[in-house]
Length: 147
Image (cartoon, rainbow, N blue to C red; front, side, top):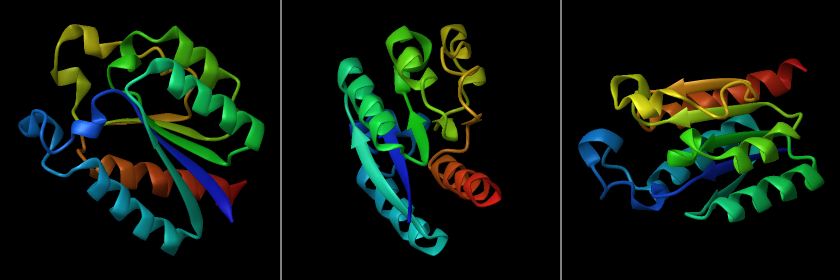
């Protein structure tokens, strides 16, 4: 069974509580539960990880590299705009990677328009709320099946 890593960055543990008018009312646990159900129908195994610490996320990507993970879905949160560390860690991966954002970053502050990861990930999904995770999982499943 193909294994997909779901990585959530800083403050995403506060989903459902933090600015729900921007990020939605579902908690991260609810999103993960929905993804786990979808993954069963796609024949994929999901591994979930969330951290508020840049180094811990880089360490997780290093583990994924050593384990030859089949795909990564990452919502890097604010690290999107600042983290060369995360960029360098993800740059060594050869699997499909999808960067997602719950809000449409292009309708927000100008500093959110720049992604340090955009040129190394396979694709980006922004602005579809929690549905972005499902879209990313379906996209990665299709990419894996096509290869």
